[in-house]
Structures are given as structure tokens and as C-alpha cells.
Length: 196
Image (tube, rainbow, N blue to C red; front, side, top):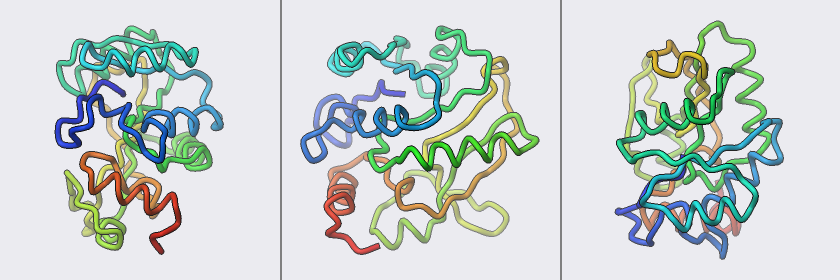
């Protein structure tokens, strides 16, 4: 999902915001390319022409969505791509994502009974690194934060799907870049200036 303008970040198209000289989306795409994922589709909107051009120049398939909101655009992207199997949905603002984490998520999904899986991090990680999550849930007495990664049944994409909550205590999933502070946290982690 790479259609966001990133108004809070104020750096133009959010997927193209630079982190150590590379666009945010590049980190995510590289992690997916190294993982066991079979195909990558980049869901764009009319708001992100540079992102679309970047993806197409890299040989990636783009799917344009109408910018009606995250969930409606996700549904349109999956339907347009004609995905009927399980589909991993990842936001383009997770530059710390690693291929091994993607594969770990997929292995867990293969074992659960639920048709969908949502990835979360414990609130404690966010406190440690000084990030402020946009959303917070109390799940079985623990405060968790959505990581911006889900696995859904593509054949049932229009339906509400019961999901397994996968809570991963991984710093790589704790920073969605929404603000310049988030970008600085990622920069510090990547340069190993921040001890975690």
C-alpha cells in the first residue's frame, strides 16, 4: 500500500521520502523481494505519480486505486490484481522491515485456523524508542500497536475476516514513518546510534 501523501511528514509523497538516501518504499520492496513472497503489487493512487513511476522503473506491477481510504483501496487493489489466495498487505512506510520477519509472519499464518492475521507490537517497544503510535488496543490485558502488516484471504477480501493477532516483540515492526521524529528514529536505528 503506497498511495499516501504523508501530510504529517511534509516531504511530498510519503513512499518516496528519503531515509539515508533511499525512498522508504525501497526498504520495504527489498525486504519483500528477499522473502518467500511470490509476487509484489504496488497499490498507488493519483496522489503519488513519482511512487508509481519509481515502482514501474523497478519492474514492479502497479495497481492504481482511487484514494477512497486505506480499506476501500486495499480491497480494490486485491480485486484488480485478481488475488484469490492469501495476500500479505504491507504499508510502504515500514523501512525497518526484514525478509526474515516477513517469512516468520507467513509461517505463523500457515498454522493458524483464522482466515486472516494481523501483526502487532507491544506498546513497551514504542516507549523504549520514544515513538508515539497512532493506534493502541487492549488485547487480553496487554496494550498492543498495529504494525501495518496483515495477511488476508484474497478470495474473501470484501468480507470481514476473523483475524489471529500475532504480537511480535520486534523493533523492526515498531516504526511506521508518519512524522520527522519517526524518520529520525529509523535513521538512528539503521546507523546503530540508538541502543535497543
